[in-house]
Each structure stands twice: as C-alpha cells, then as structure tokens.
Image (cartoon, rainbow, N blue to C red; front, top):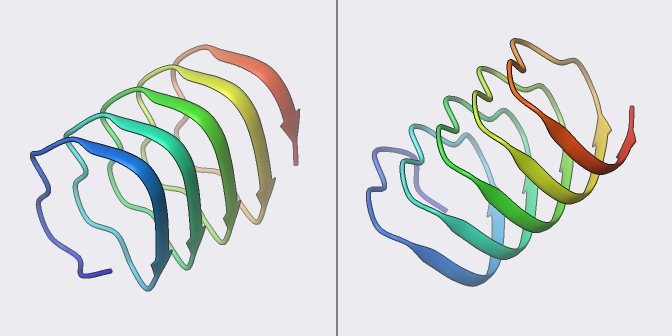
Length: 84
C-alpha cells in the first residue's frame, strides 16, 4: 500500500507492507500492517494487528488490538483486548 494522505473511507480488508502516512478516514474491518504507522487520526473498529512501531494514535480503538513493537503517543481510550 502506498504512503501518503488518504482522506477517504476504507471498508473491508486492509493489508499494508511499508510505511503509512496520514490516514484521515475511517477504517472498518481487518487492518494488518507491517512496518511503521504514522498519524492515525480516526476511529478503528474491528481487528487491528500490527508489528512495528506506532506514532501518534489520537483516537479510539475498539475491538482486538495486538501489538508487537514500541508505542508512541496513544492519547485516547482503548477498549477490548490489548496485548503488548
């Protein structure tokens, strides 16, 4: 998946190999990412599985969150299962 600004909605399965930039839309469904995430400034609902490092995640996460790596600024609520 290419980096850069993404201002539209993603619904369904999102699988990324590489670096993510600003994702300003809603993500619903399964999000799987390998590499580094940048600014994720919207809601994530469903299953999020990430290996790598996180940047600024300033919104709510609902569902299952499993992370291997290091966290940056996560300044909102987390609901569900969080494994670090």
